[in-house]
Image (cartoon, rainbow, N blue to C red; front, side, top):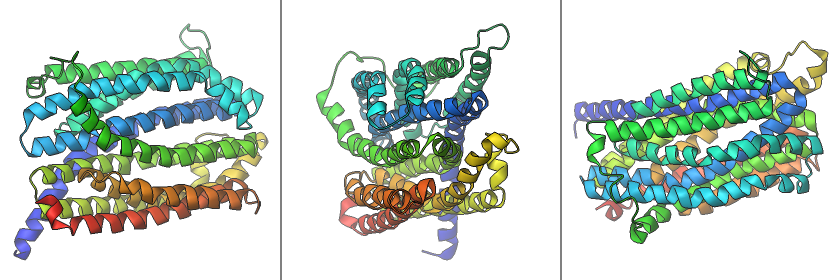
Length: 457
């Protein structure tokens, strides 16, 4: 293969990857901005509301992320079917995807409704639990549309129709932020609902985005040719089992990943309200930035999955490594910028000149430094995992993530944070070390898989 041909293939792959990644990443960023602005508004409503509301928001998003991981098993399967030109399989996958959404929503809503008792057992302050429960009792009604949207996003992503997702999420986010302001603070004649208003606005936005994407699919000239509603009442256990086979490991992986953040957040709460508030600032900032590599990981899944459908090993290798390289280059630039302006970031959430916030500021700055640097290995592991999803290798990464996230990340962070007295900074340092190990193991796994040429023949 000549150097000119190699360069041409690389340029083409980068172009196709970015055509997927930019809309998906933009959609992820826009969606995460809801939590970002929620956190800012919670901070303006008071430190206790920031702690309680932030904890509730994280709890909801953790459960949604786990369930979304299961339904996102549809994306690599549709990408493979699209690469192989199998339209009937795509229709069957989406129909059973709706069933999977329903089957996951029911137990998750029950869990959210009863989460307050678990918060008490985990040592959270009574005020924090009361405020968190106010938010959760409302936002739980947005679980079905949020999960349904994730499933439909997996469909359109697998078919390389990503732009509508971006526009729908941007509009939904704008509605959510506006609703938060109006209902949370009682503007334009509406009552001041505080935390309940934020939850209500978010729930309405989730339903709006779900219906918007569904209507788009049913009306689009190309997408409406897929009969995803016809025969929706018929459960197909074999197709549903195929979705679960691929998606369940992704959901378990998501549980291990987001579970680490969730447990760390609860440990932060055990260290005090100020520590928890400082952590919420750092966590929400990192979440917004991380949405771009997360969107890239979805794009990597689709590109690798399409090459898998064509049984093209070289295409799989090229798309996988290029995705990782692009993500790494992006996050290095962001990391440098964040390290240069840490106080400016914290000032987005709190008045740093107010003496009442001095303790939170002092706690937040060292946490922010470590969290910022930890983005580098975090991005590598996430995009590499996206490539592994593309070749439908979803089980072994779970075995690799358990010792990385929980053995080193959580246990190490706990030792640093509590026995050694490093507090929240120690917990974030443990996270950094765990993600670095996961990134290394996932890269090794991907390299190992693509050297087994018989697997793709």
